[in-house]
Image 1 (cartoon, rainbow, N blue to C red):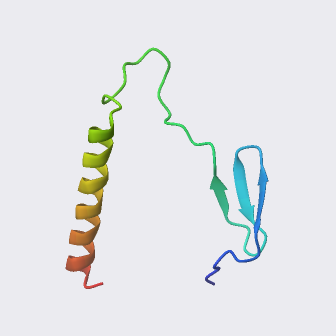
Image 2 (cartoon, helix red, strand yellow):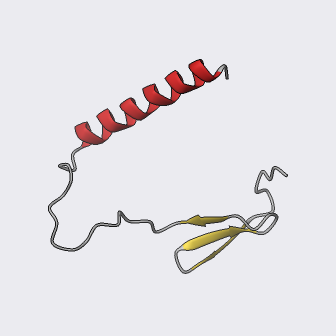
Length: 68
């Protein structure tokens, strides 16, 4: 069954639930890192942009090889 989530969302306690199919989305997600560890990468716009670009390229390559 495919749901386009048109029935709306119920929001509560950091999660949203579709009224139609019951799928849950977490709205206040944070990276799970133990306290005291240094940041994995510096949080700058350039680093985020490069990561987004690398992920997009990876997805297009996988789609191309999968025949999508």
